[in-house]
Length: 227
Image 1 (cartoon, helix red, strand yellow):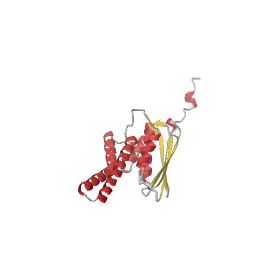
Image 2 (cartoon, helix red, strand yellow):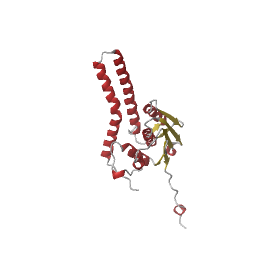
Image 3 (cartoon, one colour):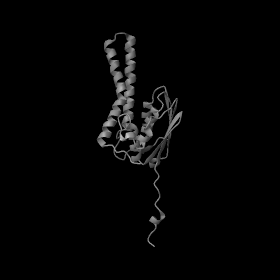
């Protein structure tokens, strides 16, 4: 299979668009709340506006912290990331009443891109249950042997059309936009850190798994010395 190539400038622009899309809604709500405070004299309405501002500011902060780890450098080249930090930002992102996060696995430091892959898989999983449900993250192994299993269960759980192909690096029509860049980027990260990502979708759950790609052993003849 031929992997679709995206220019670095296009990748950067599309990821920036995606981040802006993620934070524009809560930022807009903050602006609306401030406008109400300026014009409204009724104490009850002002209280509602303040509550909106507080919740929207918390949402914007949680989304930015998540994006910083999921898309950003988060350290120097070759750095590792604490999986506890990854759990914290994911819980901040999934802080609503409709969705519950179950995170299994001992806290550890893991290679940066492997943790970024887990976070991006969590983002895909969250999108499959818009009505809410349970997302379960299971991390096993250490270091380069780290594996991840992310399951999303909820009413009418559904994987968006084309996500599997995007992760595999073969988008339909050989094009990506701001709406599909996150799934495509997930595949890029997986291949960069030597992980194979698989997706399974059923009527009530979606399963995403990331396993290290096993390197094939060298043939015996190649290891043998001259006769």
